[in-house]
Structure formats: C-alpha cells, structure tokens
Amino acid sequence: MMEMDEREELLRKDREREKRREQRRLQREKELKKRMAAGVVALAVLVLALIAAITVGMNLSRKAKAEAAKEKAQQERLAREQEQEDNTIELLAVGDNIAHKTIRETGMRDDGPWNYDQVYAHVKEDVEAADLAVVTQETIFVEDRNNVSGYPTFGTPPEFGDALVNTGFDVVASATNHSLDKGTDSIEYTMNWWKENHPDISVLGLHDSEEAASEIPVITCKDLKLAMLDYTYGLNGLELPQGKEYMVDVFDEEQAREDIRQAKELADVVIVVMHVGVEYDQDVDEETREWTDIFLEEGVDIVIGSHPHVVRTMETLTGEDGHKMLVYYSLGNFTSTQTDLPSLMGAMAKITVRKNVETGQIEIPEHEFIPLLMYYNKEVPEAAIYKLEDYPQELIEKHYVYQKNPAEFSLEYYQKLFEETKAKGNDEDI
Image 1 (cartoon, rainbow, N blue to C red):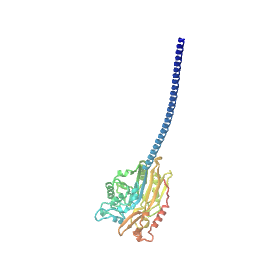
Image 2 (image 1 turned 180 degrees about the vertical axis):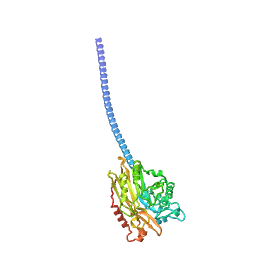
Image 3 (image 1 turned 60 degrees about the vertical axis):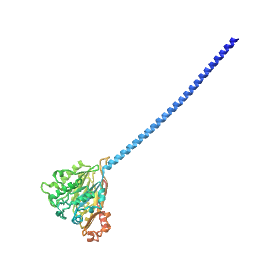
Image 4 (image 1 turned 120 degrees about the horizontal axis):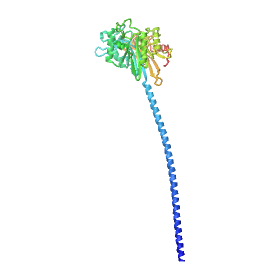
C-alpha cells in the first residue's frame, strides 16, 4: 500500500512538472508571439517611416529642383536682360557749332584762359546723359590768336573744343564746307590739338595721313560697334592741294558706297553725318535726297544732317529690300549768331539704338526730335543755347534779334515753326 502511494505521488509530481513545463512553453510561445507582433508593428512603423521619409525626400528634392530651376531661369533672364542692356545705347546728336564773333567774345579774357563752357551749360545735362553724343564742329581751329576770325573764312579758338568735351560730347564731326578756310596747316593743327588734348574724342571727317583716311571709324559704345562716316558736299570752292586730297572727306558717291560696305562688315550699326543742302531752305532739296537714297540703298541705319542753317524734318525711309533708315535731314545750327529767325532754332536728336540679342537685328524703338533756341546779346556780350521748352522768359526781350524784330520773335513762333517742320516727315520706329 505504501509503495502504491509513493508511485502515485511520483506520478502526480511528474504531471505537475509536465504541466509547469507546458505552461512555460505556452508562456514562451505567447511572449514570442508578442515579440513577433511588436516586431511586425515596429517593422511596419519603420516601413511607413521610410516611405514617409522617401516621400518627403522626393518632395524636397522636387522642390529643390524646382527652386534650382527657378533660380537658373531667373539668372538666365537677368543675364539676357543685361546682355540686351549692354547692346542698347542712347545716342544724342546736334547740328553745327559755329563760332561767330559774339559767341567768341563771351569767352575771351585779357588775362587768363579763354573758356566757353557757359555757352553750352543749359544743355549739358542732356548731353552727359547720353551714352554717345555727337556734334558737328563747323569751323576749323587755329593756333595763333591773331588768326581767329569769323565769316566768311572762320578761324576758331580751340577752347571751343574744350567746352564741347566739358559739355559731354564724345564724337566731333568735322567735314564741313569751312574745313579748308585756313588752309591745310590749320587742319593739321586741329587734328594734333585733338590728339594731344582729348585723345579719347573721335574726330570724324578730317585726317592727318592717307593711312588714317583709309580707315573706317568704328566706335565701341557698351557692346555695340558703330561705324561713323562724315562727308561734306564741298569746301566753298577751295581745293585741297595735290597729294593731300585725303585731309577732308569730300563726298564722292563711289567712295561713299565702298566706305559703307566696309563699315557694315566692321560694325553693328552704320551712321552717316552729312554736311549738305541748300542753305536756309527748310524743305529737303534734290542733292540731299540723292545722298540719302544712296545711303538707303547701301544699308545705312541712321543719317544725321546739317549745313542748311535751318532745321529740316526727320523721317524713316524704307528701301526696296525692306531695310529701314532713320534720317534727320538737318539739325540746323547748334550755336550761331545769325539774324534770320529760322536760323536761331536748332534741334537735338535723341535715338535709342539696340541690337536685338535674340535676332541680331538693329532696332530703333524710340527717337526724339527736340527743338533748341539760341540766345545772344551783342552788347553784353552773352550767348547760350537752350532747349526751347527751357528758354527763359526774361531773355526774350534781351535777345539781339528780338530787339531788331520784336513783332515776330517769340517762343510761340518757334513752337509753331518746329511743329510745322516736324509734320513734313514721319515718326515711324525701326
């Protein structure tokens, strides 16, 4: 009996041990499942986090790429705008600077240097604002004070050149009918004076050597290259000495055509300054038409005229090949002391010239035609050039010509005269 009880006790203990083992196994399985479940959740979270990170990264990448592309496009746009700006200039031109006696007297000093800055002070702001400013110096410079003279054979103090530079002019057109008034020595003196005193100024139409005469003047302004040619119809019946015909650019059709063709190969823009036309005639004469027809045929872009002593109209001409050319037939006198009313009015041309960087075409999107009025009083003496809109009311009755002709001299007269002159042409852009 005792043995049976012991066996049963052993069996019971075995069953309990087995039960505990089963419970531990089940507990381990439960814990394993929990850990597996947690792992799955963690993995899911990790996957979701990874997906989210990838999505955010892709979005950030796309945004960064978009920002980079936007920045690149902005830089390219600014670069194109800068390139276009560098290929766009403001050109200013005026007519003939004539050193008549009263104007000369305003700058003469018994002691000290002569100075003519005050003559141009009231247009200086406009001239300086231009990228390139052009004036025609009608009269030749002389070294000897005793050789200074006026009409009909002019000898001009070189201090007028200083005043033009101080005003802001960059280009001086010098081929005029008065170029030979004082002989070839004065032409040589004038060229040497410019080279020694203002070497950066471009002087057109006069030459000190045959080699220099054969070169096409090309002026670089910003990134634009402008070829500028300058011709006069003649030399008031005088002739250059044999072997020195090169000293002044007297117009010759064959030579002019060849010059223009060379200029087109060397420059972006071709400009011709022409000194031609029937004096005091406000309508365009036949010779001037012939010149401009030649220039149009050869593909000139801009023509600046002077010599008639009066303002003529401006217009855009279109050639048979579709080429357009802007012509100011005459800007009249820039400074003078002539007495007939129309000769006291000059004009200032302001022209926007650009090379389209996309197409390479030369365009003239804007151009202005601004009337000027010359003031002078012989008694004081005083002389100054004004824009008509700025001409002081108090100087009307002080004007020498008003004192001689008070019935006609008025600002209203000049405003009407300019509008009538301008109406003869057109305002088309190129």
